[in-house]
Length: 384
Image 1: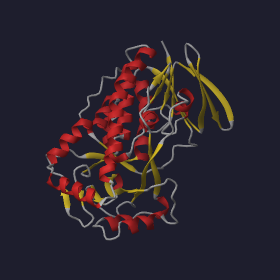
Image 2: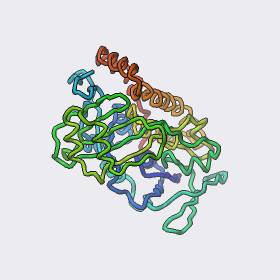
Image 3: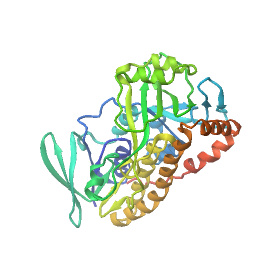
Image 4: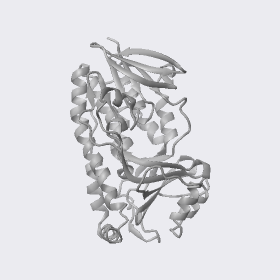
């Protein structure tokens, strides 16, 4: 029996969900509101749980091929260069870093081109008893399509969430501002990956393919919407005197390509599924980036959703997906919200205590802390 699914959103979570559903015999249509899949965004890092999800979805080798190992998960420094913790080869597990555009391109190859529609913005969702009807705007024209399943993977400002769960709270500003950039190829290389903790500021860097380096700076910001005439100059000002290779990374980054984002997350939702609609990724559990788990959890979501839908009717599968994913992701959500209260504190006392404790802690302590996030086993996604 042919089963039709609509996936709203062609980010990492949406494409992963489409891949999982296609593998289990569904016919999938992806609706992406952006006019095209652009070479946009910056880099990010993925922990072992995300790689296991990619393997379960059948894209693990391609995931590895567009990624570079990074030591940033276990290398912590002070602005003057002193190491609080240092990556131990053979003991610490490296993360994998890649550019958003590279990973999006890898995943998009697995979705038939005629099934991935850009410039298609969801504006309405209506349950019809035996299906779900989605209204969307495509090139100025309003269209409707009906399917057995709708997956809302359309980000923190999800239109699907607003349509199906209209009473859920709006995203919450977490008093954090983040700048991101990527260096020109070959300009600063090699970089193994690190994080540097200043008081009320954290800088991080990950190597990418093509001898590029992704960097970020997060700082405390009391109000959203603060803007600067020159973002790169502001990052330089805030990291003046910080250790090498930070100045070189900033010098090798085109100023017009620096991204700036206020950081929002969501309060825990009461449900991720209703009728024939499920939420996934940031649409369900947007979180701060401090555990590097946002996209990892989206990949887990996609794997569990596909596995449940491969063995059960829609209603039963979505109920099981909701039970499984809401518990785990909301734990991670809470941890990601709590972490910057300490690690991004502007208090001199808190900063001294935090750095002293990190200096005394062994990498084994860090590994045990990470195990709560990383020790996840994916379900089997039945290929049909």
